[in-house]
Image 1 (cartoon, rainbow over the protein chains, first blue to last red):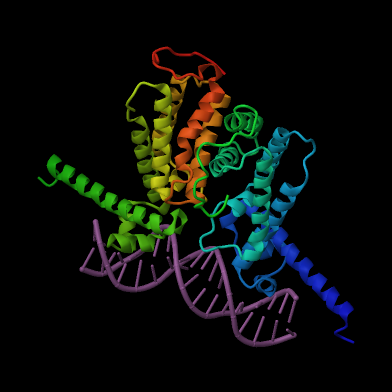
Image 2 (image 1 turned 90 degrees about the horizontal axis):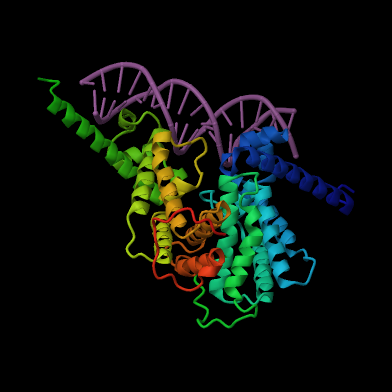
Length: 214
Length: 214
DNA sequence: GTCTATAGCTGGATAGAC
DNA sequence: GTCTATCCAGCTATAGAC
């Protein structure tokens, strides 16, 4: 029988691997040319196929970006969800920050696609976006272990860590000028939020949650 | 009499104002479409002229970007160089940070052009870049007044403040979710860098230099 | 200096043969 | 599914009349 389940699975596998090959070529291209510098022609050439073949697997260029975004978001969620050795909350927090910095700086193009809005007209689909949301919720949980539950302090934490990433990738790509400040940053942050080394109830109530994510 | 100095000056003034009109139109466009979303056609239409006329004043698209960059850099330098009232170093530092945040968030497109590298193939000319360097040197001077001269602490400061900007423009454009954290950030930063100066400093002696503390 | 007209190129996306 | 060939839109930039 032509349409036996085996043949169907086999075809499905082929199709997925062909899609993966295209996405792989896309990642090498964005690493070289930047996220906004990819064209379908270059992409096809790099993947060893022709332009129309690309459209046999993706219905548009944004669909390719969406697949890349989903893949990056999943990698991010998996990276951040892995347990951290040790039981000192401070070390767990520092480890989390180090892991985030390593993830972002090890692949600036991925970081750009995932966290900076640099593609006009591209919005990730809900399905591709979901893993990123999951990872951020996880981060907030770990911060809560350090007694950081106030919305203002959470925002201060995200600003501090993303600032390190931003400066690192912008002004010292491939180096460690800012990633090397992560421990000092955690020390500074916790000293500010836990003055008596005890989770302190903040005198000001959590402010309204206004923004979208973070 | 055709080439009298007066006529020459007049023509020069006309030429400059025509250039300014084009740049003005360019700024309104980038505010609407993003820095990477401007075309010469749209720009000309917005300025009430045609495409070739643009090339009568700028030799290329990048020359327009360069003029915009230079203008933004000058505005940045002027903004940051204005004296800050008061003589409490902490207040001066906080005022400086507030000023920087206000500058960046009040015009995200300008911020994008000036501090983020989002235009592939565009590098500002040395002449356009110079004012930005001047402003950064000025910032380092003011930090030195607070005893912040260590390179690591300077980097920590820039990461912290740019992190606030980045989160603000990315996740709460037009709001104050992160800009409202500037005072808390300065407190946290100075408590970390000046542990022995936890008590409020009543007077400072700006002329005293090179007090390396860390 | 300003226009009309267009060159020359690159981009995303498609038609149709095989 | 993959190809050749092509369409069509948009872009930067220029030629040449006025």
